[in-house]
Every structure is written in structure tokens, then in C-alpha cells.
Length: 396
Image 1 (spheres, helix red, strand yellow):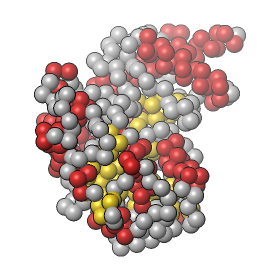
Image 2 (tube, rainbow, N blue to C red; image 1 turned 90 degrees about the vertical axis):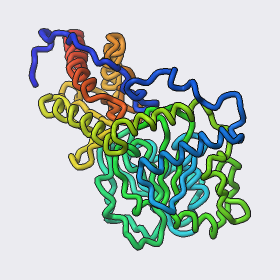
Image 3 (cartoon, rainbow, N blue to C red; image 1 turned 60 degrees about the vertical axis):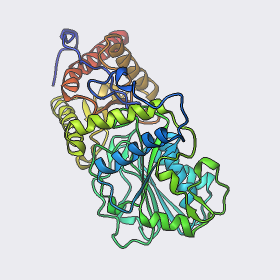
């Protein structure tokens, strides 16, 4: 799409909801504080009513996501980060480990395995932003730690064909920006983690962890040679702490956040459950795809079309003017664009992640409406035109 930058008119139609943050993500359509009035407040979370609310969160996740019978699901502290690290600290060390990283959070797990856990038999497989590691080199007879969807890179694992059905190792999957937007192959995954504030658009600070029967067996037969903080411990005297999977959380949860999560889950049911959530995210990806196809200066950060995320819609600018600038100038140009959009109240928090290549990141999770993304994209184009035109005039 080629336009005279100086002649480009400011769009007039704005998104109904300008919240495109990747976490905490937008609240579900129709959300309001009145929904939270019936929560379990000013009472112990360990009292019957509190445990019932927490167990309801667990049970509804299991039902809506189709988590297989025999798998265990729990609410854990510290969001998805706490859930991933809980899994790593409890489970790793029994055998060799492959850790995969291709964006900020996956690279953090690589760093933890190397510098904190200091695993003896460790292979780190990394790739640049926009790429994936070579999965043919992964050995699933070893334990494997990986992200399903790169929140900061917009690159998603296209399938789980590389994971053997008869594997000897455990697969530990950070799926925080994938759960509720993808139909995950649970039989290929032994540990899955996520948080409420991503695709559900609920409140932060709480994580979810799902354990396969194989992961439970590992917990009950392997004792790691490292100290475990109390909030990480999933076993006691060699047995699974069963209460954690019945709503007896390992620390004090926010019952306000719990009620918010329950209301988000009710909204999921109202749009058709998991299939409805997937359709929402698919529509959001399609809206951005159509814009990218007709915009000469924009491409997805993911280099392979099969790996483009439907939730983390990461866009890079391929204009020679932009690519020819020093990195700090590219970062400044993106910041200027995003500030313009915020001032116009059309888009909040769409600047790319600080460690990623300079670009924009639009959250396309299921609580975002495709119609709002369609209204946003002309504004992105306008902000880019204004930024480039201003820079060229200043240089002249």
C-alpha cells in the first residue's frame, strides 16, 4: 500500500476498545465490576466457600480445555512464571534435559537451567527472534522445556509431531499465550502452564499447572538435590499434595482475582467454549494478515507463515528507511508511533517487547474483537506515515 505520507489523512473511526496489551490482556466484552459482587471476600480461602470457588476455577478449566482424565490441575503462585519454575525445580535432574528458547521467556528458562539449576546433562537449543530451533535435534527421551507460543516474538510451535508418543522424558510446556487460543495436544504434553491474564483476560498473579500421570510419577519417585521453597513444593513425604489440586492453594490467593477468573470462564462458555475462543483468535490473526498483505512496509516477525502466532501479533517494519537507522533510532521511532496512538486513545501498549527487534505487538487473544483490530490498523499506518514524514523533514 503506497501513499503520499504528507497527504495521508488521520482516520476517523476508532476501536471501541483500545486495549491491546499482551498481558494483562483486554477484559472480555461486556466485563464490568458488578460481575464480581458475589465473590468470597473477607473470609479465609481455606474455609469451605473459598475452597469451593478455587476448585470451581480448576474444574471449569479442566472441562473447557478438555484436559484428559488422570491429569491433575492446580492453581499456583506467581503467574505462569511461578508455574514454569515450579515444574523445573521439582522435576528436572532425573535425566538429561533439552531446553528450547527463541524469545525472551524461553531464553529465561534456558538461563535458569544453566545458571540456577546448573544441570549437568543439559543441551540448550536457541534461535533468533522470528525463528524456531531445529526440532529434529530434540530428543524426547530426555526431558524437554519449551514455550508453545513465543509471547515476545509472535512465533508459535506449528505442531507436536516431534514429540514421541512413547517418549521416556517429560515435556514441560510454557503455554501461557496459547491456552484457550489453541487446541493443545495434551497427550504429547506432561506439564502445561499458563496464567489467567493472557487469553482469558483475567487478573494477574496466579498461575495454572497441569501434570500428566507421568509427571506425577516423576514427582513421587524423584527427589531433586536442591532446596525447594515452600510455595514450590508439590509433594510431602514422597507423595503428591492432593489438596493443591482441590483448591487448597499453596499460598493465599486473591479471591477478587478468583471471582474475576470465574466470570471470564462463564464468558468463555457463552461464546461456545474452546472452539469459540479459537474462532475469536483466528479472526484477529486474519484481520492483521489482510492488513500486512496490502502494506508494503510491514511483515510478521515470524519468518515462516506456519509459525505466525494468532495471539502475539508481532509486526516488523521492512521499509529501507527504517531498517537503515541505528537500533536506538528504530526504537525511538516505534516509541513515537505508539505515543501518538495512545494520545489519540486508539491503542495502548502495542510497542514490541524491549528485548525483541523494534516493532509493534498487538494482542490478538480471544477477548479482543476483530472489528477493533480492523479499526486499529489504519491508525497504525497513519502513525507510521507521520513518524516517517517528520523524520525525513528533520533530516532535510
